[in-house]
Image (cartoon, rainbow, N blue to C red; front, side, top):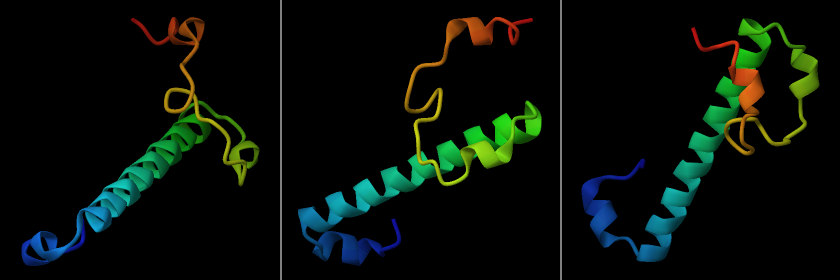
Length: 74
């Protein structure tokens, strides 16, 4: 989480919770970036459609439509 073990044990629970929340937010952003990358470069979607929207990403923020997944199962 970016701090040494000694600093970890010296810090307050409030600081540790804030670090955990920050790490979770970073992981969520990484997952959204991966979803947009797959949509644009694998499935040929328009990248400008996803620029600065900040909206929900299918599979991460909202459930994926089961009908959309039928073509993926071999």
